[in-house]
Image (cartoon, rainbow, N blue to C red; front, side, top):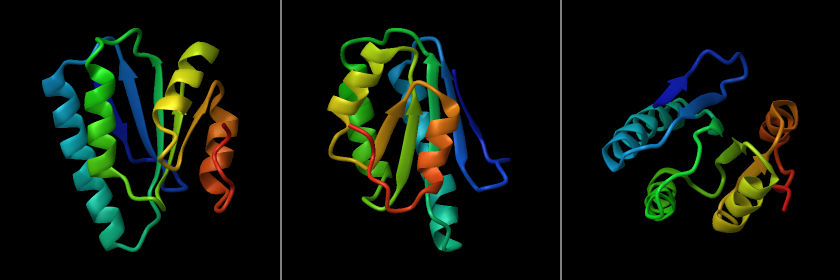
Length: 125
């Protein structure tokens, strides 16, 4: 399951993902997320996304390629995306897979939120 929350006072889009994802679920999520992002862009807002995948578990082998393709369709270089991961191994995989994006992986929510709000600070590698 993938849910999006827009109630953050700083305008952060919070995405919470649990369990394994189907291709249809991922595609529907990114379609909905792109619609939210388009509205924010139109309003002149910076795109900041906090994606919590700590409850997602291990995904199918093809899921990473699908996510990478969806990231390319969804995000621009100036967008900031922080991912909360379940452990250090997942964090390292995410960092390696998404190194071409302005995306950072964290094990804790507070540093992730701080990085999202600190314009100009490069993602930790």
